[in-house]
Image (cartoon, rainbow, N blue to C red):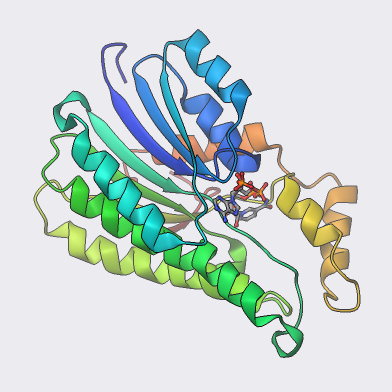
Length: 256
Ligand SMILES: NC(=O)c1ccc[n+]([C@@H]2O[C@H](COP(=O)([O-])OP(=O)(O)OC[C@H]3O[C@@H](n4cnc5c(N)ncnc54)[C@H](OP(=O)(O)O)[C@@H]3O)[C@@H](O)[C@H]2O)c1
């Protein structure tokens, strides 16, 4: 990236955890960032100002994916596409909900987890691809997946299903975009294990309903969690790789 280049990134879940750390690292001169979460982070606005970056923060609940994707589509269509050398969507927001066997799950919570974890990323990807179709800049979609989309865990059915669905729809979109003019490159990426609120939620879950809870407690005790700052740097390094998109289902630890 040169100092004169101009990049636009849309990122969900920018208010906390991995997404917050990625947003902070993206806020450099020449970058425009749209953060989409239920809450804004005033500190990010300060960071953007100091860096000479443009930041817009939406308070948008992704549990209504149709409204969120319509808003993204309208926003993209209203801005000057010619400005940007690259445009990227990072679907980062997700939720583990309250881990429990499916037989004792609360229907409304199940539905919410799938809307936030799977419907919203797919609808936002659709809106993004449609609105940026004729743009001149490089187009990328980075979906933040999880090892649990690839290896099942009891009491995590909605999370496993959302991430497995994210992996598969990314592969399907990669096939579609491969033949399109200025086709988007898309990757569903497992980001490693990160010391965020999500891990706090997993460690704090009911031991009775979530037998694997102890694994998350041990990982924390053994110091095996990556910091959000370090994980964000690794994910953004992967996003910048020349071969980004060559493997649509990947792990941040995959060698270049
Ligand atoms: N932490 C890990 O070990 C780990 C491992 C593998 C994969 N991942 C994946 O990495 C991503 C980030 O996880 P994290 O650990 O950083 O999670 P986190 O600390 O729980 O943060 C989740 C983010 O998603 C946003 N979000 C949640 N529900 C939302 C909603 N209804 N509408 C809009 N935004 C919503 C939150 O913002 P608001 O609360 O402001 O809405 C927050 O910014 C997730 O996709 C997760 O599945 C994490």
